Length: 625
Image 1: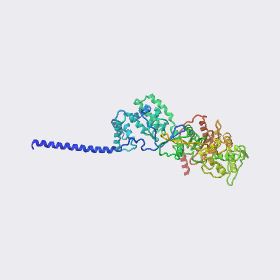
Image 2 (image 1 turned 45 degrees about the horizontal axis):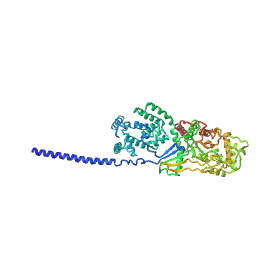
Image 3 (image 1 turned 90 degrees about the vertical axis):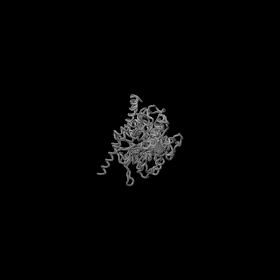
Image 4 (image 1 turned 180 degrees about the vertical axis):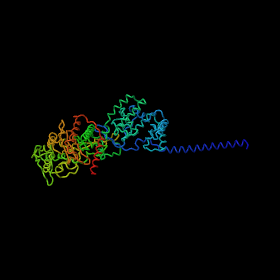
């Protein structure tokens, strides 16, 4: 072949190769673009991510604005990183992405380091995602794991780095990340865990919140205090290592841990009350429609004292006397519930014993003697205490020997059953039941004489409110827990209006009833409840010591205490309303009026669980004998 023809052939073949390569490149480019579009077509709409995929929240506050509990997913205001103490942002960078200021959204060095470490351990022990990638991931509101999602995450991270400054990315992160307990964003977390704005976080609090990000459940200061403290110390150590704080600052910050030692108690035990209020508010507004802030009647200080006192008495004297549960409720003269503890531990049992129906024994005699006074009798009038038989039934007196006739005030103070039944015969059970219903008892009551001795089931809340009518001079006390309901913009959706209550007892009869109630404390079964200020109350013990209670008041607070077992098992015979219930009532009222130091925490759930296990084992053994 001539050389010229050969060169022409080679040139033609070269041209074909170039065309083929160009065509292949164009084809691959088109395919690549299509694949890229397919991968990123469902990237999130950044203008709508703040409200996607969450439930409306309800925040319950005490009467003075302290956070009691939150329901739903809680968001608060968005904050810029430069509006917060500098150590907040430093803590995030130190523990989440210490090369944050060096990379452009994707840290290749960090990814390689994580890969080597994971291969060495043959499992995933370290992630390679940057803080910016975490922002990108959080914007999806899903936990899908796929190659497509990872590519989208990287693309979005690079885009975020181009569009925003490092400070802005940090701000986006802390406003959208999940901190646990239904809270999204650092302001919501600060509000939920520490009851304050994020701008007022201390160094310890900031490190504690940022430490949650690895695992909000495992490091929750509400439920895992020890783990939370350890994780917080790790965050502070990392901040020292990177030069954000000094070792001295870290040591000072760790001194703050004891201030938050009782978070779980304060938050969890409020739930007995907030669950009750949540049911009430559903009759007023729709809690699923928008975020709501509910200002309640609860006094955080009284609630704390009530919780600690109940646990202290149960751990010291209750469990060993076969008492597993205790409940307390306190109301003021308007009916506002100031404290409500429905049991030993909300974590173990959410059943609210303040609202359950129990037999209150002699505490029900309040209605019998009240009706007798309404019928014209006086505290010094005498009534027979001798044995009594009605058909086949004969009421017995507990540790009391008949002497003939005794004054009403002594019969009430000594809780003499035969005297009570004779009064019920005199005034009629129908009028006693009507009086109980008039004072707020809503449960069905029998018209038998056993009812006069407290055999029927009523709730601690209603019984306590009924005693409150004597405290107010005869005005009916109707329990309530909501002061106001607002939405996030501050619009008032509901405001409680407390008009003058209905008179249900004459002031003259109230004065006589107070004489009887004071006699119980001064000379009767309720001596252990006595305060250094005027106080009034009545003990109650049901058959076989299955329930014991003390209900009483010292204006302006009326308080009821109940103890017993959920399975209705009897307590030890020596347990009566004049023992543990009177002691709890006394301790609570002393702290309420500043007559004793504030109550302090005691060991809680672990002891209760051990007791429940022993109790179940005992029952199992008995059933198999």
